[in-house]
Amino acid sequence: MHPEIRKILSQKDIEWYGDLEDDCSARWAGLILRAEMMDDDRWWWAVSDAKNDLLEIDSSNNHDLICKTATSARTRAETAAKEYIHSFLGL
Image (cartoon, rainbow, N blue to C red):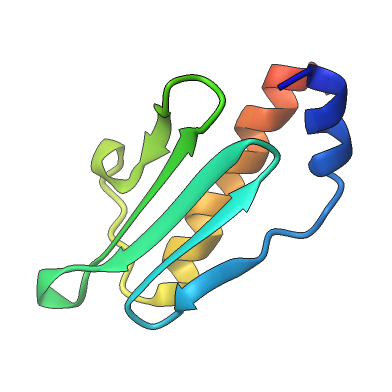
């Protein structure tokens, strides 16, 4: 995906699909964001670059911070996605 197209797509809101209280995902600016309820009331999240062989950008596996709510997991995924896309685009 051309960087200019990603730049345009990054201006849109991130929309989540699926069960927001169990397992959900979003596609945004060429990225795939996921959040899923795991055992012990912990939430896992991840961001992958769909246009780069699903390269994992970041995930909760890389951090000590534990997400205890769906909202916090989605927020962490969104933050990681925005940081990546801004560095990718040089913004």
